Length: 308
Image 1 (spheres, one colour):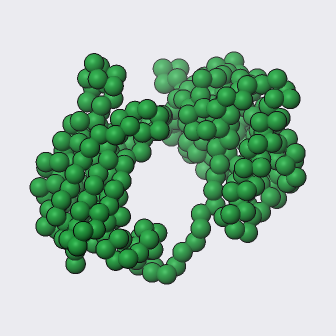
Image 2 (cartoon, rainbow, N blue to C red; image 1 turned 90 degrees about the vertical axis):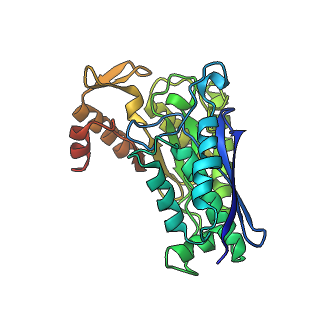
């Protein structure tokens, strides 16, 4: 058992140029774990709260000094002396100490950073890579599987300054036998997509998450460009590569009118109509995954989609 001897929080800058929380956890024996909390451009109202300072004179209100203070004071005081390998206990201590349903006292950014840093430190103390340590925590030691990457290659919505409503268009290299091969397929499709867009006179600037962010007449046009890129790269769509989308529908759902207002296409849809719209895209293209295909409060849409 390696006890926690020090917990440090600090404010760093993330890949979007915004502040985030970094936590550093020290265990007995000199083992250290370092982790930073991620953040997204589009978030739901029921998600765990990412605590920001709100001081408009500093980082436009996005500073995280309050969350950092929670790490350096309340959280550190509660965790020092605890067993660093007791991950569930460590997490529960922070959740109970926060005491809110959505982690709004300390911020999910503070709690997550400390939780992950603790896991990294504990993994180091056992001489294990993080994935192997997590497998142990899960009760499945030695059982590993490499994830199938979902690569975001066209950005829209909150991830790009363009007219595309759907936030992410992704590819999945399902025909790959190894992760290395999957990454190669993804890279080849991505570079061929650049050629496709250039040939059509479209912008190849990239969005928030590294995918291309052209202005397009419709969401279907994004899928058509990806299909062309897959084929240009020498692969078969639906066999070697499948498609996925993150609609982030809450970002274009008009709660007052109860419609999905897709300004990029100049169309509005009721809940049921939007379900049929997505169904049509799935019939035309091998889309195997749709994330946030309705607004978080659109229960009618959820029930309708469960029928398909």
